[in-house]
Image 1: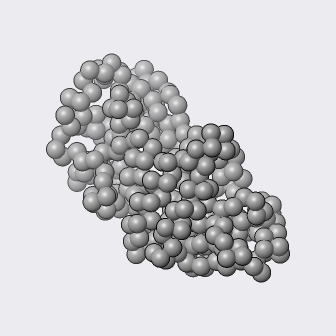
Image 2: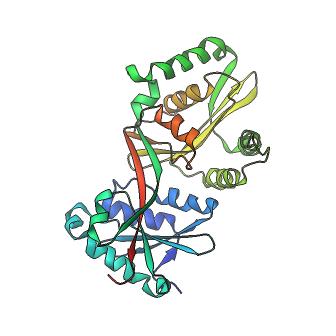
Image 3: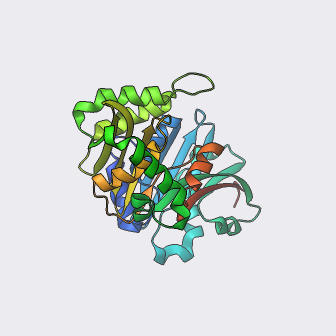
Length: 301
């Protein structure tokens, strides 16, 4: 059993976690809401808060795999990161006592050198971070192709298009649109995880929510939605009708303009280990790719 001081992230306590993260390190790349959203992909995230750290854990595959994340600590405490790792491991020692190996997760490759016989495992791109101004206007020489897409949409479709801010009255229509755009072309099945995530994230509808709906000839052809957290706009939903060339790029840039998003960063989330998604997100030239790396250590340190 996990200690009572370790909580599973849920709809009622994720803000408590976010407040603790903000207090210790408000530049931490992944928000509590993002971590909560992992549940839709069968990953439960747990946390423990102390005066000097936030400890994160995750379980997947029916609790067969347990991961201990790099503790969130202040920059002043960085020289003592190994001590915080050990404290984090001890917090769940009873739960993992049957394991010969402890699985750790970090966004710092140098953490591998903290423990003897650490073995590097898989990694994935957990967040793609962009400068807001770059995406808002697709500015810069590297973004010329993206500007071309926006210009194509503007020239060929904008006259019959309408972009509006999201309102609750469109909820059912938006979900119906997301379902249509979430059909896997190979299996012809709806990606239920995406839809369940969208349903809950939109229903939150907090004051820091930002979203837009794109119509063409009065038909919904695009929807995007996210939340401003600290100095970052986290986009959780991006859907557009790919048959309308440039619709994705137009929606992405004009949502930022319509809602006057002026925070420094835009987070377009992870790539779900999809090669196509990775290629697409890299094509917008992110300033930061927040990679989460996994490694194992002996359970006798």
